[in-house]
Length: 627
Image (cartoon, rainbow, N blue to C red; front, side, top):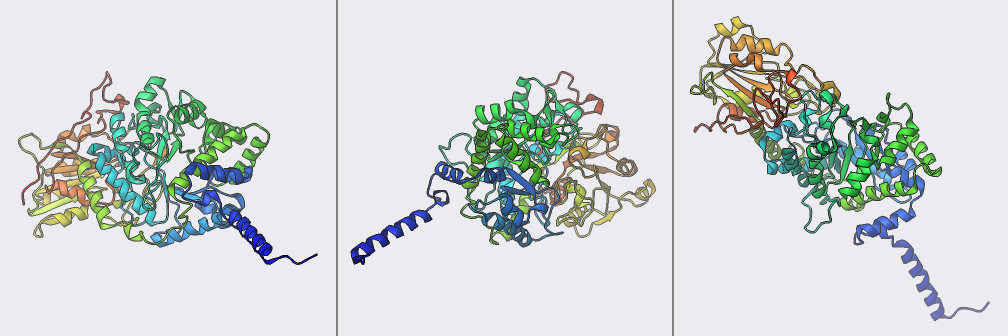
């Protein structure tokens, strides 16, 4: 064989280089390419195994880098209270998330996973995060711009820990306060809930002009993907029983429970979570007409639909009775990502079998994966899969705590002020001889924050996170010469013999979340009523109620001089003292009807039997005192 000429060798070398360069260019890895082209390119490279992996979301505790690599897992979550270490720092969180992410990046195609967490009133799982008032209080503010700012602050604090996705906002319309999740709802009025979807551009960023309707949007590394939940009718169940049946006409469903979704989708919400509840007896996790027919086809939602925690398991009673049916029903209904959260191999095996045997069509898998990849590309997670430490100083920052304090001030409702209108008790004087502060919730940060705080059910006491209790807020506010006496549950004799100028009594509900909060009596537990009786029978008093909803208050009303609904104000108790002592005026108006007795429930504005103790929209106002 003769020797090749130099020009010929050069030409062949160029050809080889061209082939190599061609091989190195991968369209889906090119951020300059349109999202649609990137999805198409990546999809055609994926095996069935890789596609099904994208549809799986597992709990942090089982998400080792090896598991991520072996099963091509698409998403990981922290369940309520699931943390890398007690009181973990932002840096610890980042290292945990990045470690799991490295497992995903080491797969053949290097598709990054998306890490999700509940951030329902601030970054609520994380020690030292700012805990904002729960939604029941924010609805009172009627202030969408405030709620948008809370979204912005929450996004920064979540990103501070390396997490890019939150299961928020809850846009339930709570129609019955007996429901244990009522505090996650902004109002019984769908219009207020619609207005409060302004939190979505706060979390995700402002949708660019000329965006196509239904396309998800996340504006870079300081924003997070949001999740409108729980689709649909979760706040309308019979007797307010969690995960129960919502009995209502289609017209009623669309006019009361659906409007928040119209606004969320028009604001580019990235994901929607399906409700555990049923509509007229059909489980939402198996409702193809609403999930695919209405949400995807009619409303043109192009993000991904995610199940709730073990949501598909609960399509049978008892849960997990017939898992292969649950997989078929849930995926068939149009759920794209399944929050499993532990036993993921069972799901993968069942879904793989069903696709291979044409029980679930390949087109349904492709629809799910396209949607998941669309959100990942839009978020920029392919370009920036690993978190850095540049935002750690945002966690619990002074600015965010000031914002939370403002939210507390705007969310309180003054229900009574003085035994007669011409003799108001509030605002209280800062300078006086001696004040009594009493009640189970006066010096209890955990009770003040409520459920979904550090742990799933919440935690009483003052060791769960950093914040200001109402007692400390009072001490910070009064004149240095004023003596503040704290007695959690004093007897009447103690109150009478101490010559107090006035008393502040802070009582309310214990912490709870979901079904553990369902209540048929809605009463304040003892010793709350006894404390009110002992104190208010002996001295002028303002009672501050800490609760996730209206509670039974009528029996005590005549005895009190002033009554304040403070809901679940979160870590910044100083906002309560700001109003009690007149640095700011009360402005909040009820976003929920306050009933006389539980026998009236459900009772909402516009009902024919409407006879409330305090009507929807009620709220007394005060003027700030000039110092």
